[in-house]
Length: 191
Picture 1 (cartoon, rainbow, N blue to C red):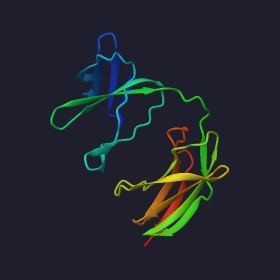
Picture 2 (picture 1 turned 90 degrees about the vertical axis):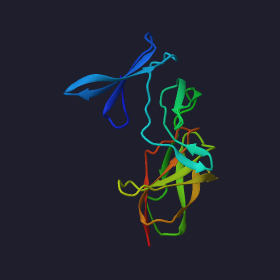
Picture 3 (picture 1 turned 135 degrees about the vertical axis):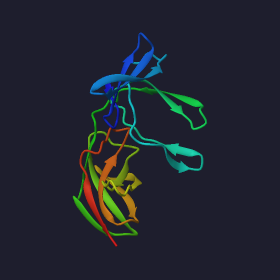
């Protein structure tokens, strides 16, 4: 059984029945609220929390971390009722997970300024590293991404332009090297 991203529903896959049962609490008891056809016969259900974000005209992006290797199938229901399916084979990485730590714990910048931020990477050397800065706020959603490059030894650098004031968390990510947002720095952006 797998819980939804918001924790309010649960999904129970039944590969033999080729169904996924969506359960929700009604009157204090779990009730089947939806019966989803499941011809793929998978035994894991992943529901993403976010929505598709426009990346460019006609192109949308959504990021989801899949931690278990396996054969995933992504089904997307479009606004016009059409459904699109993507096959997502995921293999286990054959390297140790890399770790990234910010060189500095705090950066102070002005809005409109570009900050050059650095991280020290241990483990696998990422080829697709990028810095992610985000405002951990419920009222204002802001994310900034910038490509990072290796500048020397285990040091990676990214230039991030901060347009909006706030107190950002800053991490280095890489899907290829398994970098996750374990250790963050803070960027204080003032007007």
